[in-house]
Image (tube, rainbow, N blue to C red):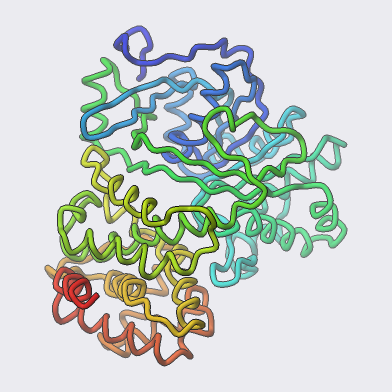
Length: 486
């Protein structure tokens, strides 16, 4: 357990009176990224006199919430580079709840506190119960089906937020803003879609109220935050003098772009390094395609080649060149950003990937691919198809995903696929011959590929060629071959 009195003198402690904080935000998804990103920015503002505090909520696992409670709602964040590190104690959490342990009613009630002005979330793409190919609510999602039948006992994120909106409306409390901090294009629009479309199935008037009174600001978030390992916890405990089971580590880089569209106030995040803008979409696209797209590319093809971390991929000249080519040749032309030096941005990403102090596992990034592929790679592929241009590195990333979800690595070892559609993927793999038939079967996943890409002969044939090359030659040789051709 974290013990402040045992911490070294160089660890930064909260420089503010925590008793003055108010629970003005509820955040759903107390994961590593939120702890190292949004909570950090809000903690910096508290040191400047802000009274905005967080009620942190985890809907499923209660381990972190329980550990946080046991150490007075404090935890440490360590920023690590190859030759430097800095640790600070984050003290901006005012409440902590676990959906299963405390009950979903307690979570709804927390969002119904009069001071709450923002409900935010980092629950990954799969938590929105939406169809990535369209950005709309998936009415067949089991949790949505449940919430339509039992709106007072929601299981889904949209159902939970809708229940709080209803309660606040009934109590004549001011509305809150709903802010997604997940990696999805137009994440505010997706959040609006799933909540209003669910509301409309209950009561059209409720959907109209939400459209008129609730805002859904979009955001773009960027920071590499690897999952903590046992070794990382042990090393940190030795340095701090006590164990912190809620600890998180991150790279020094931090970026947060926020659409300034809040209905009931917000923290002055611009004073903590955030950018407040009128349109987030160009920033989102740049980050999703250049950073997240290259991350997915490296995750699948790196894992298949036996590289455990992104920094390991960067030690391979072919993978380094492929990642940069993906960014600048395939992704950059599809972007709507203006006044941004995309070559410099790509070089900065490569430099961040080289950071050996950040152990960002390829397997971690490879999870939930069916939710990530559309915005990271497939939207770019569609752009190139419309414009009659090639995008072989994007298509190799798609083929790499197909090879990965086939479930066996190049050494013949089983890959544990972590994905909300893992059962469907396993069924497709089990019932398709490896090669062109498997590619065709996977392209039939409309929730991922829509109904258009499987009708594009150029797309299908090239992905099939690259997939077959991966099977025959392996990931490393295939990447090297494509770099040489480029």
